[in-house]
Image 1 (spheres, rainbow, N blue to C red):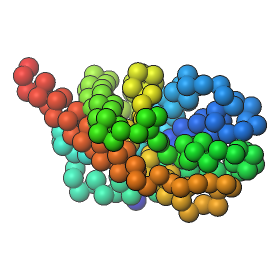
Image 2 (image 1 turned 135 degrees about the vertical axis):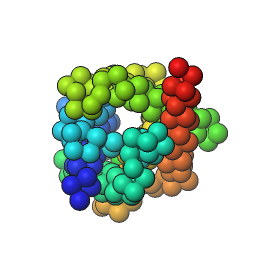
Image 3 (image 1 turned 90 degrees about the vertical axis):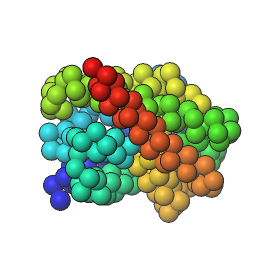
Image 4 (image 1 turned 60 degrees about the vertical axis):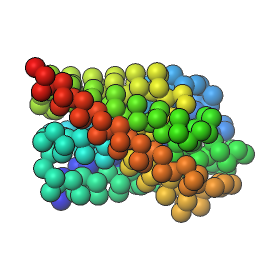
Length: 239
């Protein structure tokens, strides 16, 4: 239960700060409205670093099923713990989305475009071409998992003061370089649980929840994570 709670709190912080910065930039009458992509990517980078600092010493701060599966594949996480990680991540992500909605309640009502409201919960592609959207998420998550494994190996243990910051920089780089096409979900819990929150919460003037696209930011990060873990193991095996 301590592991579940740590992952829930960490993922809640991730979504509060990550979806929160998206809401700040996209929703009407926010003081940060239209402040742009640099603000969003910077906010998401810090949204990753803060919970890693907060709960890394307890659970390792996976905060992402793709990371959990990758760590299990390389032997850093016992498979018997995987369901507990996933439970904490999805519960925390849902709770985080609810807190963002509550924080920006009046701004949802002031925003006319339902697509912008959905983007404060979950990702949607800039150009909808599912094979390429899928590939983009695979590549982004490959970079994430490969990078995290390398950082943790060189900065172990995770509680190192520099590790969370380096992981935040990694997410920042992914957002700046690969986030444009799909919004770089690179995390099934980050996308699916808030999308469910969008569907069930009384968001003022909301439209559809984008379910026909929703499988992409769930499946593609898992595929990219496995490839990233396999590539990392292969690189080590060649040393």
